[in-house]
Length: 131
Image (cartoon, rainbow, N blue to C red; front, side, top):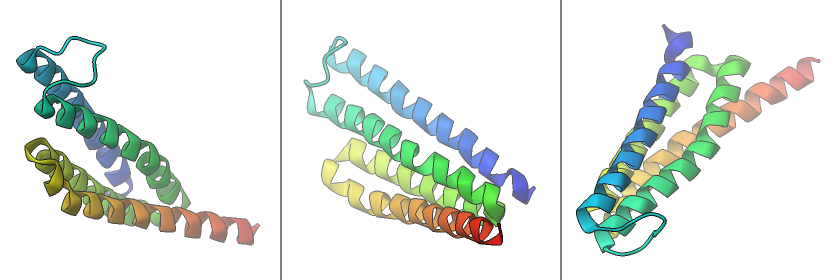
């Protein structure tokens, strides 16, 4: 099971990305903001920023998750991934309510990402030194 944890985290991350996209579409309908507009009602703008920020964060997180998993840290990368997910969910729910409430989730998500980055660097460094 532990070697499958990064795959589970990846699947959950994709569901999170889908959820943020769904929230934007819902906000477009609720506030009458036709595509391609990216501004309008503050609640729509928050939903849009949540989606974009989550997408940006995923682009940093997913490669480091898989590098860490591939270089000997599958279990711990998965645990860090769950921390990242918890942080991003907290971030999204808080930001949708009020932009100023997003900081705690952001910090937790960044801690999860930083952990995968460190594991990826250590694992790759160890592999390079081993030849």
